[in-house]
Image (tube, rainbow, N blue to C red; front, side):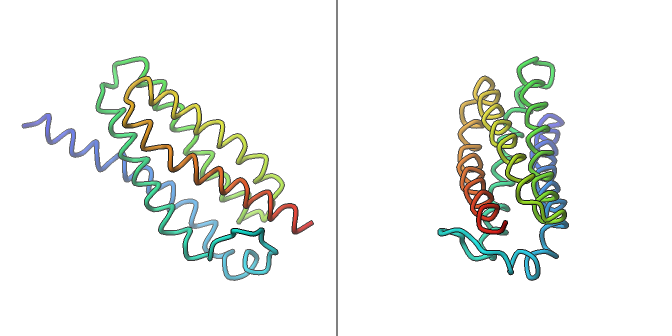
Length: 161
């Protein structure tokens, strides 16, 4: 019974960690949306601003579930520790992108950073794959969305010299 309780706590903690990263990122993002971001020239395929919140919420929940799956395989395993450490790095890079792009209003630096984020996500997928294929698969939509975000970041940088 205690084991089931611990797993439930781990599950909600993993999701909460990811949603907290999203919340921190939104602190930088939200004030800039109606002002600075609204005034930018945007590339083709740029979705309406309201799309980003729901998409990111779903992605953070999927990331949390993936994190839980890996965590539940046992913290004592080296491959779990490595996977979770790489995951932590990419989560920090995720928040950093919001800071660079929206708070500092620096699309060039955000573009450089999103390349690092993309590499870190790819490394996370690989590390998660070694622990759990379903956990790795849950990160694929995140990787695809960040690929799209990189396109948008580049487009905004190129269109707004």
